Image (cartoon, rainbow, N blue to C red):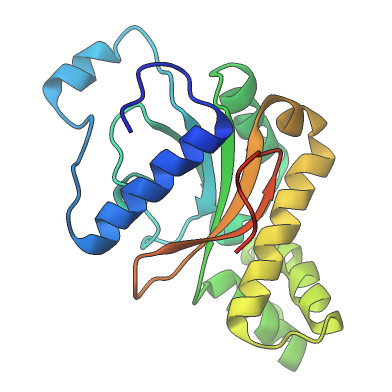
Length: 206
């Protein structure tokens, strides 16, 4: 889908999922990655989605969604943990840049989730500010356990759902101005899977 005007949240999600399918199939188009696109963006940016993902080096949004310059407004933290700077950045993407869609992008084999599970098992917290990241992920691990979930994919999904809920609860303007979805990325396959959605017409949790 070529985006010549501001899409709806559902259209933006369809565009991302189509790009991911191309990436998985090994047939990327690499759109908007040439000199002409670079020059066209000089006056300003008009991305069609905010992607808030984990900082994991294997989770490069423009690559796994087969997009290019100016398409995505990307915010990343370890374990996609939320703080004021994250909320402000996402609100900027929605309110100032007009993005109709916010994506929370988690993934399997997440180091932050594994670290939180380890702390709960042995009681030894990591040093420095890594501890703060782990502490923000721990409620998701505890919630998954309370629901009887112990497998890593289920815990990852719970953390994605809780992050979506946190964004919507702490920033009501997000759901008023954009749809919010949670996607889980499988490192081995390269495929994203829909976990949860808020404020979209056509999306349903997988």
